[in-house]
Image 1 (cartoon, rainbow over the protein chains, first blue to last red):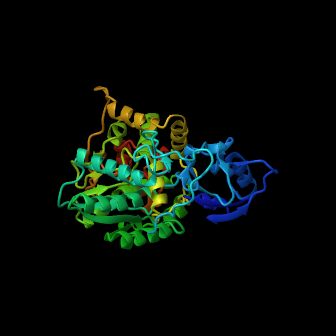
Image 2 (tube, rainbow over the protein chains, first blue to last red; image 1 turned 90 degrees about the vertical axis):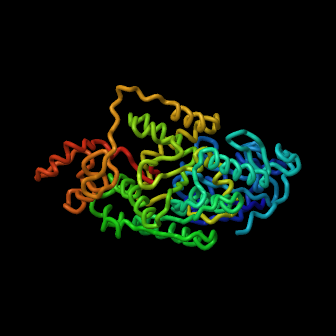
Image 3 (cartoon, rainbow over the protein chains, first blue to last red; image 1 turned 30 degrees about the vertical axis):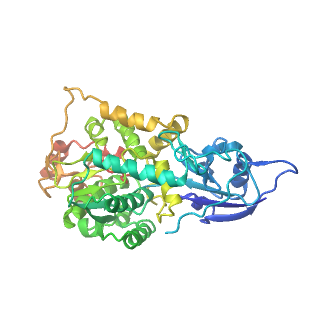
Length: 98
Length: 359
């Protein structure tokens, strides 16, 4: 599944300072790809350092905002949000100075 | 400044959730303050108008005043500069707005963020003044860290920044300084002051305007504004801000309180405003000894001690005794310094780390 992932607010520093990643994420035949699956994939494939800045337990660290197709993931079920072809997912840290 | 493109609506969970304000457009975020689900356009309106109400209800500004916006290039001050210039136009505040930045002299951090502020100067048409530690104190933070190491550097930076902003504000001849401290920052500071037993600061830190008896009052128009909304606003409006952590404070003490607040927010978003309310409503026992405000004998800056903290720290740097004013100082020989050590009673400021937030 083709997805566009964007990291901002300092999170890009955890993935080689690249903000936008066009990625292809495999999912099992007939299975839906959820945000929960995507977070695991991101941790394995994109996060190069300090994963604790991005994740805490099984979800993003509090203070990291997530938008799926420019919509707050709190409106779409957070980890249960299902993704579709060509969706965009944005992660922004709010934890850096003002 | 191009706004984010409108993307296709999602068909799955959450699809068709409509804005609870206009009932027309697709909701784009959940407000932590009210839990309302609202669209981007309604969000801009409520976000800006709430800040307008805070400004009006608390009489933060008077017509004709010159106002400096403390600008670091980060999200909060960038959004503050944008929103204040917008509201100033829309509601005819008749304010002269300026950007005021402090150059601490941190290579790879402040030099980059100052570039952001310089772009903001052009984007928002606000004149910019930069004051540097080097010109004010003769030392850059890089030089200070070279001398003292990474242990107490945040103390120096915090103390120096506070004064630097005041000096810059005096140079700009402004009536007031507006800073981008948001609700999360203030809740965090309430907790920190409780954890430190710092009652003088606890009673001050929730005031929306401080220093009215001093030369340049400060105000916090974002006192009730959630960080999440500030970041969402900056993202949707594609505002240009800088977001890299200071290279000298990867793990500041404040970070723990910050993380705690964020954990609480996830469970109950109103916790942030509730902590601020608790801070506001604290009654300080009459038997609590409060420091008396005076002026520094050396530079004339406000100080509750004989010398202000900046002068003590600077004296230490210039005499090659950088521990002066930090923890227990040893090896001081002159009477003056001994006298100062006793009368100042500055014991534990090393625990007050990371000074990006001045209260």
